[in-house]
Image (cartoon, rainbow, N blue to C red; front, side):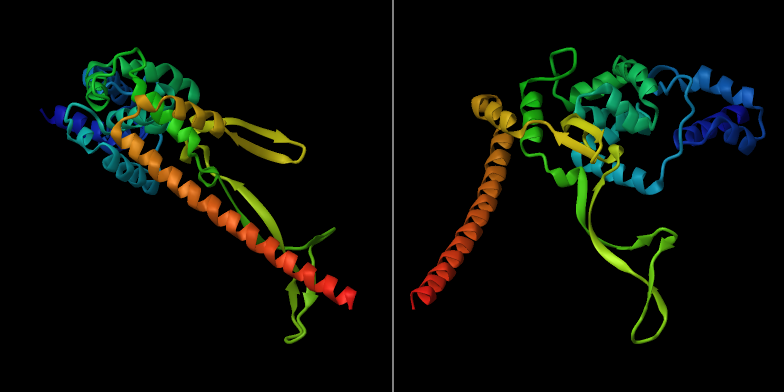
Length: 292
């Protein structure tokens, strides 16, 4: 009984990201014993875990952020006692991106190759499949998609925001010379201070923090790296032609998003008109002066 209790405690540590070696040291058992527990008890039935893969530790902030987002999206999955925490995350990520590989990679923190093979394995787990079926309201096709899912994906493409993928602005940086940062003498203090300048900067967000399914291309060219999103206009045209597939909620969201887009365009147009009016007014004054 004592051994079984230790094994259960070790399993909880395993779920939290502790490695086999660390578990063995914590409970005073051999590494082979821990591996035996994993293969005999931890990787069976509803508690199927990643095969031949030791879990990687995650940053607490990232884990908590994921849990909050998951709880907001589909809170009911957290009530399923038959699933582990990572399996719950997999279900929630899957119903958001419809990609088993991506969902596994985000939930388990694994490499692409492992996620590509193990993602499908989780999909055929009865407990996980049942939970996904509940979340997606008995989706009919092999990928667990229906017309509402497809419509949602086109919505995501049409209203994608580039600032979700890159951040840009101005930064003050030191001016570099042949031998390092250039310094100048401060007129007030007489001290040497670094010479600085303002530059434009563009920074990519981490791939784990963005929805890669909305990206058409990422490339490294002679002028630097660039990211290209899926064609928004084609997505908008598709949405216009298939509004009959939308749910009431999706139609309402599209109306709100279109209204925001129209407001932004009107503000830009008003700003342009004001500039042209001012320019024309100035030109008129200049011509009057010349006439005089």
